[in-house]
Image 1 (cartoon, rainbow, N blue to C red):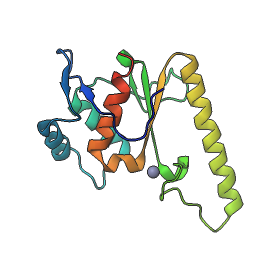
Image 2: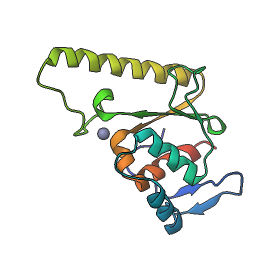
Image 3: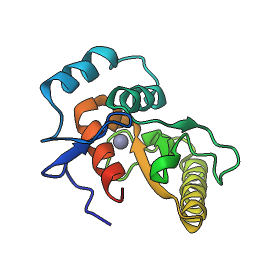
Image 4: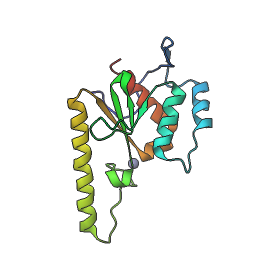
Length: 159
Ligand SMILES: [Zn+2]
């Protein structure tokens, strides 16, 4: 329900079951922890997100096959399902990785449209079961700090 452009003014972070800590965005410690433990190159986007959530102290489950669309990461406590999407295949709007090959343009167009429709169906199905769905784009996993802020803001939204 909140605008998703840019990080919020304040981000609350939760560490396990301890009382919530309030900081503006990430503390310097958390930041350096994130940066030192998450590699930028050659790490699969989904692993980056998992590592990030773990570092910040969220508990999650993976690939819940009993849920529609088998979300990549699920945080049952928060009622949140996360999809980590490749920008090319899932057509990240306005992203420079979301290119269309010149060869076989028609083929690609159909394939992309199919993916977009399927993603939307998964989201609707999950939301109808009461899950909140968040998409993390591949390119967002290159800026760990910003991604952490986005996820923390989303997760604390309705706690
Ligand atoms: Zn992107």
